[in-house]
Image (cartoon, rainbow, N blue to C red; front, top):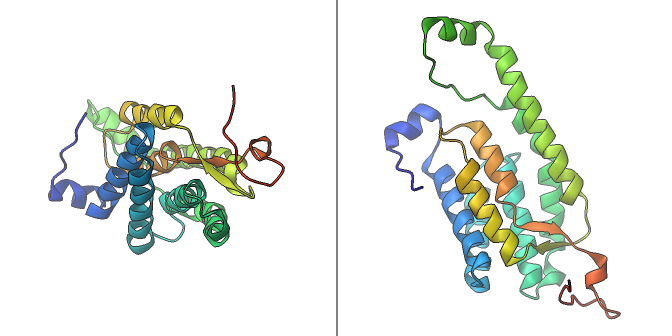
Length: 209
């Protein structure tokens, strides 16, 4: 479902236009990958990375996602020899994301009564810590899959389609730090390379069922 956010909405949430643009670029790149437009997808991942490097914090998980996506796209484009530095930067970015999670704030949701408002104010620190714990769990899961791998490859078109659909289904309805983190996790288009997908010369071969 399309979203329409005003400049006032962004200011109130502590977001910038770059935050929304990163989502748009990355979702579009995944959509291109899902529909077989690989060249457009590679270009989109590159544009998302340039934006992330310019406008996002060094420990922002979306930067880690963009670095991973770009490294995988370069490998898919036959530029695997040039991905080492980007892949190393991605691993370093994922390792530094814990600092971002520590600063993460929980979303403020509308309450139906003064009682609920008072309870949220009273227990706000515990409420925010629960969100941070969820964030740490998500990061550990992603780091376990790709954080220290030696090579990254792109997910297949079917998986790209599933991730776009999942984002449209699960993205938070408010602009918040949890939405930024969930975007980094769901919109990740890279995965660890399967060694069985290389032939005797070290070249990638098509996967078989």
